[in-house]
View 1 (cartoon, helix red, strand yellow):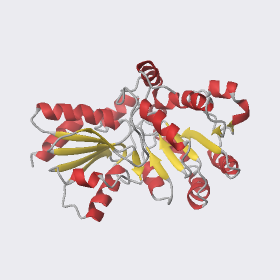
View 2 (cartoon, rainbow, N blue to C red):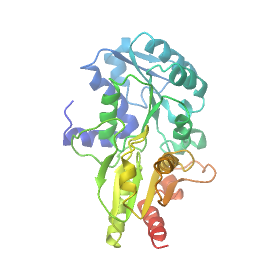
View 3 (cartoon, rainbow, N blue to C red):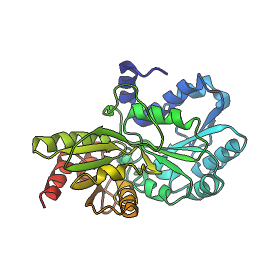
View 4 (cartoon, helix red, strand yellow):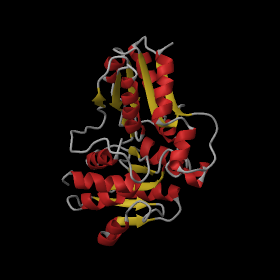
Length: 321
């Protein structure tokens, strides 16, 4: 599929979750060896047209996430690429036993799609907030974890995993009318971080929806005389070891994620720094404390300090110590 300004704008209006089914339908035009399984989220994830045009490749198991993984495992064992999609909060917790056995232990190359990860469905309350999914998936051997920065990168990663013969968890964050980080086509490789902005004082490592917000914060910091690098950590596991070199060149490393500060990219980066023996300062920015009450997406980001203003203030305070 050609990536042009029209496609990028259309994807942005849908957001990563709404875009998922549209991309599946586009990829179906050039790849016959895959199917989609969902737990009653056909319309919500934009799969209506895929269902209509490829009914023999679409399975809706109903509100049964554990069964969704079991069905997907059976399909994958027959050599067919399978994308299994449901709420990120449910696939990482309710279906954990099935994910652990069928994807991690058996190494079946299921492409598990965590829709509305982070605070995206927070209006429905804490039950639908996926703030621990990365932490849970990171503990499971042999599962690759990807969190695209925007809708263009969501397309690129979905295209890339089509030929990826390993179990994958793809975490889709943000809401409709999503900000655009990548306005045109670019080279994307699973496991390779993307350096979006160079600086000398602070290194900001971000994933998912927080990549755009981190770029905004970097702009605010520049206005205050603080030079910031920004890196898109789209592949959280395995993390790109080359980022150790850029971290070592900065006074402070900051990780930003729409996820708990426990077990996410902050901990992954800290573990990498420890293994590489880097004597650096690391500050983790993400969701902290108890579950917030249900509210709109932007409200939850504000309450959790995941806005450009809050991130800028915390970095300025840390760099001035």
